Length: 91
Image: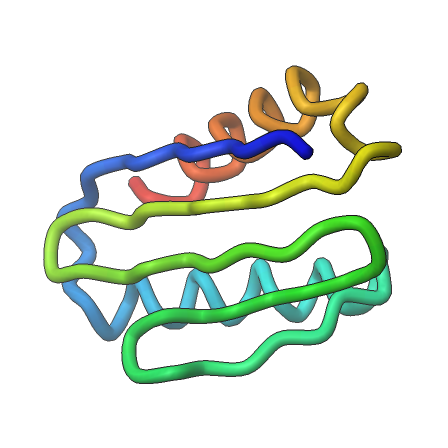
């Protein structure tokens, strides 16, 4: 099992950052059959072989992801994609 953790600052405010996280979750649900739900300001998501959370704060967003055995081999590229997406969306 592999773990990925990425945190990025933002100046969007909590509500706008939550909206960005919701848009990302909707995309993941469509493209990768991910199920998700909100628990306060934390978006929890899960699919076969992976589960994680997006914690939305006033000035930062943190992504925590646990990958199962098969997806662990792709952890480097998955982390880069998370970093790229956060860098693009949190401006």
